[in-house]
Length: 303
Ligand code: GYE
Image (cartoon, rainbow, N blue to C red; front, top):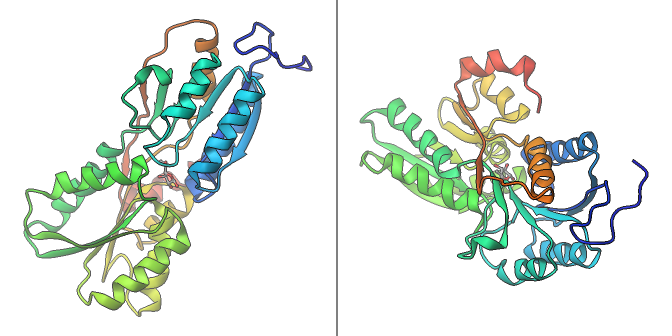
């Protein structure tokens, strides 16, 4: 495809130009997600303009404004936090550039500001994590520490809420400390070190993603304890490093969250620009993994 991208928003030149404003490169999940988007764009013959916001909303807003100025055909992004998008999305709407949300949602009341939201059900993921714990510990007194994702991010809010809901009927399960580790390995490690210093009786870590769980493993080992045994660990994502730690017995349970959203995104973009109907909400299908299941799944795991 060497044709020049259309200079008209929604124009009919055969090459579609997509501006994609990514959250950052904070985790193994994000790396796999970026790769999926880049590969799928290539396969679909879509010209991709890509930016990395380093987990800062202001950078994402700047990127979206620049895509509007460049008159791309479609804008897609994964909003770092849920709130504060209305004005920039209104600018895109006025410029008649359709917007597709992937991975994370916005909490905007005005649903005309975007075409569709493609991604996981994070509340469901939190529930699966909590339900496993309820099964696992029965009536035993259980102290949980929670490593939350980026403050204000949809997956942090929803994974917290879903988990709370699932354990709400078990008064023996108590979340004794909860803090953000920003979805990074170093963040998870740092917060876990502080948790270990101030709480002698931690039974379980619930980390909102694998990377923070992997950071917590380092902190637990450094404190002379055995992750997966002295302290059980539940995480979300199921990226390779997480699955390896699960197979090695250092993590006890992982709720899957698929980063492979690229094909669905390109498909939705093509449909929107062709004037076809797309579902307002496209939910990704996902499973969960125990240690035994991780051993089986690892050899064919793609990310
Ligand atoms: O779980 C985490 C990443 O938004 C679902 O962001 C995504 C989350 C994912 O940093 O690892």
